[in-house]
Length: 181
Image (tube, rainbow, N blue to C red; front, side, top):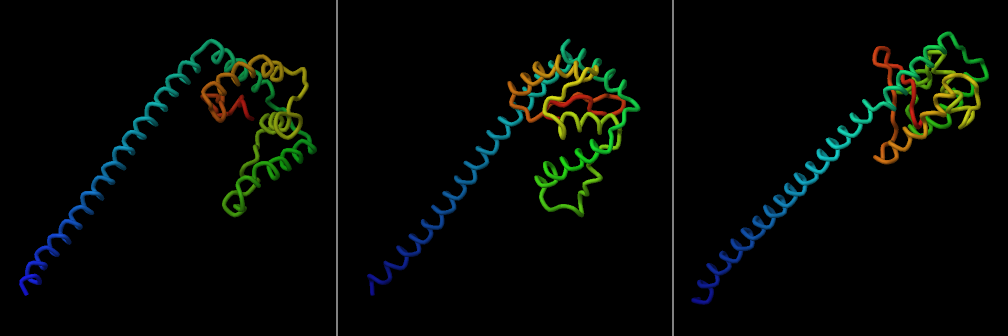
């Protein structure tokens, strides 16, 4: 009887210790996760801050400001350019095979026609640099500028492991240049 009576407090104490230890372990695990989350948050913020600083410096560099001016002029000079039916068809086919297939089955939420450019300049340039040849040969001003600037801008993009880099006209929102097209 004495053994039974003394076992009860011991058993209760063991249950209490088990629950208490389990709770402390759980709290330590959560604290560790919070610490890891905070460290990762700071790493991501630091990465994005440094990337923003580098891209801002690149954006105001002589190379980019000149390229932006030159590409904008060349893009504007293409005003009124029309892609022919074969080019429209080729671009449509490119979008269907290269883009829509990568997006997966979303024909209801993202119809192909909503993605295709409507501006003649955009259709022409996207056909030449995407759907047509990977290196179109042309004597037009845009092609010559592309040859002049593409390597330097691509180097910056690759140095900082960026997916793409765009030059966008401030007033119109037109993308006048993209490394990956």
